[in-house]
Amino acid sequence: MTVSDSSSEPPVKRQKIAGGNRLLKDLPVDQFLAKTALFAGPQVTVVVAEKEFALPKALLCYSSRFFDAVFKGEDAEGGGQKTDLPGCSSDTFGLAVQWMYQSQVVVPTRHHAAPAAAAAAHDAGISSPAPSRQSSEALDDADLRWFEEEKLDLEMYPGFAKNGGAQTISRLLSFLTLAERIELLGPFDSVFATIKCTLATFGFFAPRVGYIRTALMPGHIRVAAEMPGSHPVRKLFADACFREFMQDMFSSVQPPARPFRFDRELKELDSFGTEMLVALRAATRSRRRQVNSKRDGVEWIFHDPLNEKDFKIVV
Image (cartoon, rainbow, N blue to C red; front, side, top):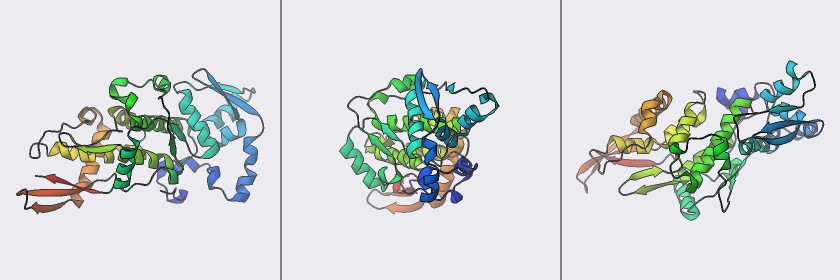
């Protein structure tokens, strides 16, 4: 999955380069060489969760409107070279720093059942994160310190410590949230591609449960609901749980009953309900009806908006 030209991006992505700055990886060689000075010069310090990050001032200000205002605005005229960034984990800010330097992030997390996950990703028809300049690095033990620093509600992340896919999505969501906050230079197509791939990879069909995407958790949907209405991750999550939503709708005629995992979010979050309604409307327009002679019934064929594969619901 490749990064598209910025001129064709929707507003939420275009606004990231409205000031004229572009990701260094997207610059022609002559323009890139002219920007190498960003990595040199005076340094400033950003303190995050008691950890200090010493960074080139020029690079920080080029990559973030927030830091540009902090270190170049009126408040910085006194020569202040240090600032605090509360409400963020040091790990998440580390991803932002990596993005500033490399225009990609490498998420440290452990992935369980890798062979099965890889097969699922292949079946889903979604490319691996590598072409989109994203990757994950396996660890023997998951470091969940950042989970506490981000002040996430553990109740909304059942089985989180053993779910590598959910950890990846949580880390990337935290990164995207911080990116919005500090107005980090984008676009972030590669991050969205990694989230999409992870959602498709960590999914399976169980006879008594139906098809579920285990990497998506209630906490993720709640975090996404706090993002701007046009943020791509909101639609991405709605697309990811559409198949489970349809299973719940027809559970009375296609047993066993499968209560929708995100029913609480559907009731409490107006934005999520809206996204699901949009996904449902699009799906009903493309659905197909066929008679199943073997099962003496009718099947509706729906299009899964996440992996672009068809699935059947017996009615």
